[in-house]
Image (cartoon, rainbow, N blue to C red):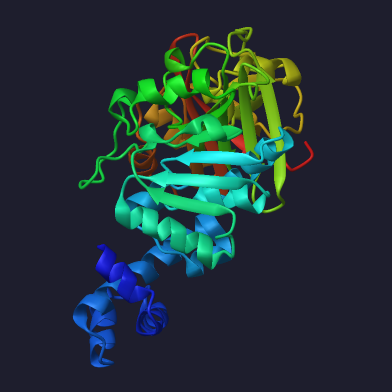
Length: 399
């Protein structure tokens, strides 16, 4: 999309085209395009409206009902922060006394809007003209234009001396291709600028990819990993005055707005023991934050292999930081033996999880040739270096 197409969508005719596109989106795209053209819409306007309608449908999972009035790009949507995460970050900034914020590399404005909803005055900068215009339009649609100023320009040139805090979400996709960038030195703005912000602004937050190498975490910064409903969605570096602990795992549940925090040094090692009655599969935020040892202490649990992040305990203790399963069988991995056991128990459905195993779950599912009306869980792992399969059943809520 270019600026002319975006401008056309923001006219009364464009609003009507968007409404028509939303009625036909979600099915066959060729049929949807034909329906809009038959209604008299110009081809270019129809295509732009359909693209926005499809993106808005996808964005509902991140932004909720607000997605219906937003302008979006594919790359911008993929990198945009989920509303539940952005709102929590904004609340933490506000609680720290932040009243003015520079959002460097604001993208579509998800974090800027969250900060504004928290009462923070935001100065947002975005290098791409179309994305910057969309961010401003999204602030207007949300009724927050008086608190969000969006400018198109180079984030590295913004004067940060006039704000309380800085938030930076460097672009991790290549302009034009949309391909992911895994090397932080290739981010935009570049990594040395991003990490240098903490030396210039006492309160700095940087959003980073969840796979960030711990070696790249600046000294003194708090590194936080965030999961939503079991999916690891992002990591953030809280620098300067905002750093509270070395490592933090934040586990969010959207269905009931639950927030659970696990903190620690990230340097402890969990004790190693034998396989016990209950298996705990830690949340990915806990694993990436290197807080498995802290969780082991809370659960009175141990590892069965020093390199595998499965924990084992004698009791089923309720925790938001791990899925708990009861182990019924521990087998050295053998397809023939496992198939016979599951057939004997009439297991026709299995949930397969793995850590430290090269087996592909879907291929294993086919090879097992399941039949029956019972269900079971399988954990593919290693115990003391040997490949094992643990047959499990879920633990009811409450243990």
